[in-house]
Amino acid sequence: MENQTIDFPTIIVGAGQCGLAMAHELVQRGEDFLVLEAGPTPGNSWRSRWDSLELFTPAAHDALPGSKFPDKRVSYPTAGAVADYLETYAKAKGVPVRTSTTVTDVRASADGGFLVRTADTTFTARRVVIATGVHQRPKIPAIAAQISAETRQLHSSEYRNPAMVADGPVAVVGFGTSGAQIACELVVSHPVALYGNPTPHVPEALIRFAPALYWLLVHRLLTRSTPMGRKVAKGFFTRGAPLIRVSVKDVQAAGVQTAGRVESIHGGKLMTKDGTPMEASTIIWATGYRPDYSWIDGLQLDELGYPLHRRGISTQIPGLGFLGIPFLYGLTSGIIGGVGRDSRYLARHLHPYKEAGHAADPPFGLNTSARDHE
View 1 (cartoon, rainbow, N blue to C red):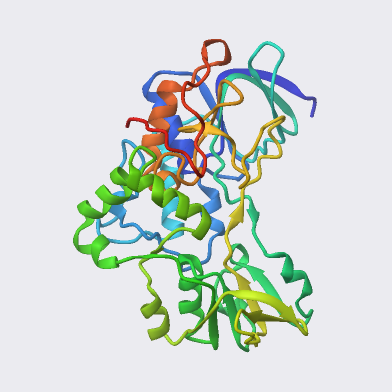
View 2 (cartoon, rainbow, N blue to C red):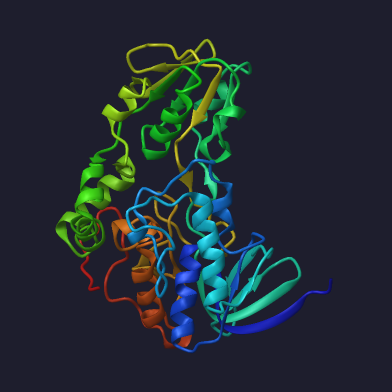
């Protein structure tokens, strides 16, 4: 097909919860825009999660702006239910989405706007919002290459259910919420050991019996505008997200063996810090993801691979915005119930190139002390 050029004031890349929340704001403002989605439907990435995955926040806090989540407020939606909700949301809100369209290149144009390229179309825009999230590249330690070929290795993004895991002992590496949940599911049918240092735990009782207090804590207090939030943000990037809905005691009570952090390889086997060898037929790396912004021309990144920004507004490229970055503004910036706040801010403050001034405050980083308002 011959490449064509189409112009829109705003292009949103990604039709997950972040992109759809931003789309809602632009619909409310009567602005013209287009959402480009690589998958066949809005919210499709949720259909690639493991079968039994449930959100760690109840349905009361899992809604996008202008639409309740269609489930009991105290229930925990499955990944499939989230995908259905996002697809329905896009249709109900009349969001213009072009699906099965992968963006291959975003770059500033000579006139101060942007060129957004796909396989068969080049879009021009005065603003671009990158709403792809940060789950692009599975993060697997380099030592994985030294493990015996007899041991099967999976990243948590490839795991679906226990039936796909061969008989024999399983090692789950990464003591965050995902690793703990996968280990607890597998231990019913396999000997399982969970390796790593557990992240801090948020008691489920707080979520279930004091939901308003829980949401006040995670959504209102733990932001870049508060001393407590900035302290948590530093630990978030160095230690990972907290354990939610599952604790160390829960894991051990389920029969999962817990061990320390993996430190080395000996004889093709993983070794913990105290020299204990890991006996496993299958290793599941629940070690998170790395962001990938290599398709944005000339974008400067910090030491963790994230763009320099101020509440999602690029401090380097005027007119370029981001959603879904961990702690973009608050602890809830990366989850479905928290993206509405960030999208509202972007809709109000992300100006086209010719209208954008230089940010008066420094970009967010691991050592930031900048303050901002809701």
